[in-house]
Amino acid sequence: MRQFAITTIFLFSFLLVFSQNIKTNTTPALLIGQGDQLPRIKKELAAGNSDLVAALKIIVEKADAALEQPIVNVVTKGALPPSGDAHDYFSYSPYWWPDAENPDGPYIWRDGVTNPDRRTSDVSRLEAMGRAVSSLVPAWYFTGDERYAERAVQQIRIWYLDPETRMNPNFRFGQKRRGHDYNSSGGILESNRMDWVVDCAILLEDYSGWTEKDQKNLRSWFGELATWMVESPEGIEEAMQPNNHGAWYNYHLILYSLYGEKPEIARNHLDLMPARIFGQVFIDGRQPQELIRTNALSYSIYGARALVGVARLGRHLDVELFAYRSTEGRSIRLAIDYITPFILGEEEWPGEQVKPVSTSRANELYWNAALGFQEREFANIPNKLPGDALPSPIIQLLDPLPKGW
Image (cartoon, one colour):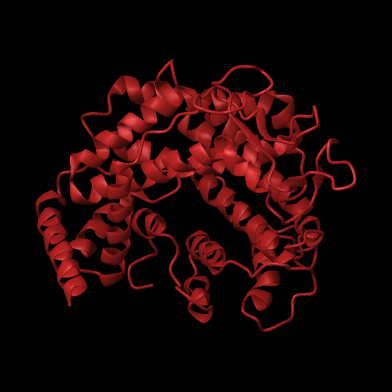
């Protein structure tokens, strides 16, 4: 009964705020989400849409927690990166472990098994920053409580802008392997913790505490990161990867170059995407490079999610990739159609899968596919899977399906 009362009070208080603020905000030009749909979401929240109210409740709870947690930065760390510069991001590769036969020697690869030492590196701080910002900003945007916006601004400035604490715009030392001098190009993958920071920063452009200087400097930071990604040895190597690594590289590069006001970089890499799809997707829809993994179905979902994400970003520059189909029929749709029977359990997966498939990741794939292809059938697939059919709260609020779906 007490929980019901708290939920009722929560709902009533937000309905009051919504009724006061629905008309006060401009329409933000989001890159991942859909800024033009946010007025509708505010109206549906005010009308008491149960799924959206539940999503916002989770966001606000996380934002409240973020208000009580310390602001993180990249310079507070243990071991320094090889550069000796604490401003350089530094993390350990997840699947590399001590060699039992040579304990003092270089680490060796154990695919799919994460070394807990990884959590001692900057990846934990980057995740904390991304979680905080992606809860604080939506909490402010939908409730009007400026405490959330102010805290988000403080966190963004500390991580990206303050000369004393800012992260250098590169992932040169991401996913280092102990005992190896080689810089792993895979460290660029860890930039995914910043994806929603971009859209949150765009939302903050409607907040008086986020200045034009803040906006200019943050866009410049991401523009510098995009330039590093196309010019550095690590970025060049990652761009050449024929699997999900290469596809996610394209996604992050296009997202950051769009926000960083370097559209020429985004367009150049969008022009290369038909070749990427052709190389990543086999003629029957398999993604061969993912099938060699110990969690091959999970990585096939991961690779397909990257292709769908790139295709959606492409529409910001009027590049249409959802319709691409090679002479043999290779396409984004084919990759999704191939894995769907296995995700639904209708057929037995022929590859290795040592861990249960994440339903939430599958939900994100079909949610994005529904929006990308504009086909409701994709949105219905998660209803056939165990557990919650909805993706994360921020996706529900900032990147919603069409009304009635």
